[in-house]
Image 1: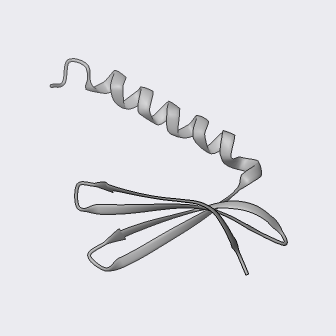
Image 2: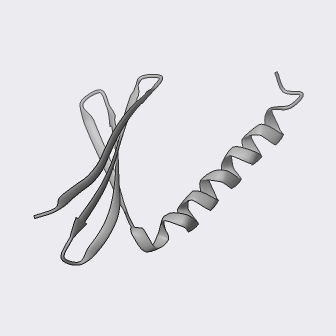
Length: 72
């Protein structure tokens, strides 16, 4: 049985995202679920990879900002 440590939900456009930090006997992990039109897709990130995952998301945000300048 997984122990819920944190649960967040955000809405972006027509999508809902659920962020659930959980723990089980094998360790902690972040479960990210996307729901669109009743369909759900989920990814699981072990807590040992959260900083690397965040770094990649930050790089994507910076690239988006850099490519948005002058295109608006």
